Length: 265
Length: 290
Ligand SMILES: Nc1ncnc2c1ncn2[C@@H]1O[C@H](COP(=O)(O)OP(=O)(O)O)[C@@H](O)[C@H]1O
Ligand SMILES: [Mg+2]
Image (cartoon, each protein chain N blue to C red):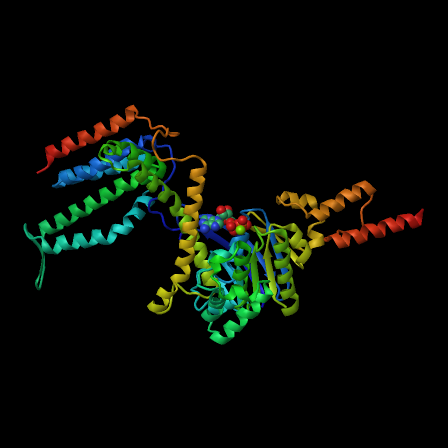
């Protein structure tokens, strides 16, 4: 039942994008999120879209996964699209019916905003699809390291994040199993009046919490037994390595930003 | 109530790139009132198949007949509660499904869901706690205060309380101590004998399959490859090995004995008692000949 969830999944592969250092990918994506807002006319939006699709091509990720990543924000996309269509005034009238008037500018803005959503979702999906959760947390930890100076518990935060990521699939499996076990005992989560359905959540949540706490305890014990004492003086098994290609990716993005800046209206 | 599988295939995450086919044209019938064992290597599809027995999974292609209900690919299945009441499943590590404040309430959960009156449900719980070998005091305790083995017994009582006609057991004794294992297996066997409960046992233990089952179904790579009475199934070590299975210890022991005696015994024995009697008979005959 839960196996159709794809969001946040990592697809191992050996494309140039997969091979990039997580740090460069993280910087790339965050910078890209800013750069997207430079676009403000047809030319610049077209460039953004082309640039994104080129990266999709290089990453060799099937469009299926990216489209799937869109699903959670689809509502938001359609909603903002419609708002722009109906609310933005300016340019020629395209359509008029009773009190509803749609203007050229509205359509253009609607398309622009949807494109913005699309490239943002695609880019962040590519990051999570081509980078293992562990590498992402490693990357974040290293990038945030300077914050340690102002007493931000960077190592602990990264550890929390990697543990959570590690246990998401486990918890989903567990949910599936317990759900089935309770359904076999006649509990019904998928039909009936809403009140009944809410009551049916208790037999699911209690065992889930019990097992999550038990897992947490086991994990804490296992870590302690192996001498874990926080990040102080801890060496790394996975060394991050910055290559020419990482520099190249960031330079490429900088060039893109300059071109966008030049062509924006 | 017969359970009949016709050309059942099943794929997890169907229609996504993570699609994983787990069953291929599985085809067999489990006649009412029999004790069936389903054996097979890890990943052979045993747990997947048993979830079809009460429509927790719907086949991707093919049909499952549960009594006179038909669950078929592509058709909407409504009102499955009746089926789920008739076919009780004890999942692997069933103690993970406990959630109520007291053992009593947890055992009553199933029956109440199926519309049994509160008094009747309580009555069942009190009887069953005894049957699964727990003292009556545990009824008022929290299930989470019990030991792992006791929790397992409570969970089993919770499924039995539904008074199913068919009981499906997915490795019910995994992780228990040997004595607990035997007690629980004997209890299920007694229920099967006394109440004519159709029993389907999914197990790794060839010993249990040999000791209790009328018939054994072997699963291999998502297909049912062999079916037969225990003494037929366990006679052929080579075929078993090709499915990455071994005969029960007692059969291997018999094979050693036969090597030493330099002749085969007259039949494949499935229990210690049977083999001891057989060897004794053989030796007596030998002595008589001399
Ligand atoms: N929820 C699931 N999602 C995807 N694949 C699964 C799932 N459950 C089982 N499988 C796969 O289906 C096959 C059969 O599994 P299972 O029925 O659990 O085998 P068994 O119980 O005989 O060990 C295995 O290859 C397993 O990896
Ligand atoms: Mg299994």
